[in-house]
Structures are given as structure tokens and as C-alpha cells.
Image (cartoon, rainbow, N blue to C red; front, side):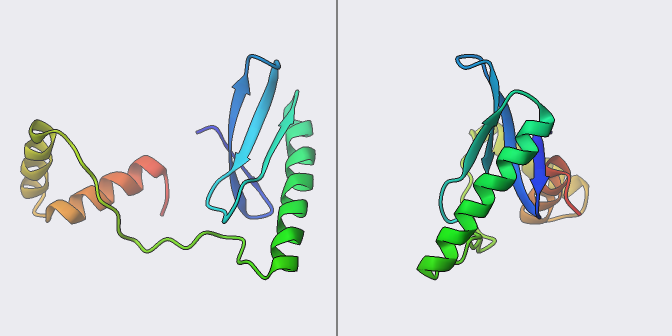
Length: 111
């Protein structure tokens, strides 16, 4: 995955061909914080600076830096995918919700 962890916060990294640099963007925050650099060492340095500015702004404003996730979201898929997922879940002895949760967990590489 194209992610980088900086001080416990996750950032998604992508190459920006327009400026010939890598761009990092922190995810799961109550606001935006991004950074650019030509290499990994620079990304880490610029990411730390961007995160520091963001966290300082949150502290001044009394805002929780991390976004709160409820654990609920709605997912829309085409009927054939819905049917295939329901069959796969049943074949594993799981509810569709349990099966989808495990599939997402594995795809996201979390514990």
C-alpha cells in the first residue's frame, strides 16, 4: 500500500507527475493536511512539519484532530455482486455483514 505512518497518523502517498514530486495526504483527520517532497526522506520531514502545524491548529481551536468513525456505512453494489457476496458468506457460515467485515479487514491489512 502507498501509505506512510508519521507520529501514529496515516498518510496516503502518490506521485504527482505535474510537479514531478511525491504528495502525501493524511487521512482520518478532522481537516486537511498534505505535503510534497522529491524523496522518502523529504516526505517524512515535510509530513512531520505538516502534521505539527495541523495538530497545533487543532489544539488552538479545541478540535479533536482525528475523525470519529461510527463503524457504520452504507455500501451499494450491483445485484450480481450482492448475490455472489451473499452466497460466499453463506458458504463460510457467516452473515453477509460478518463476511464483508472480514473481507474489508483483510483488504485493508488491519488486525
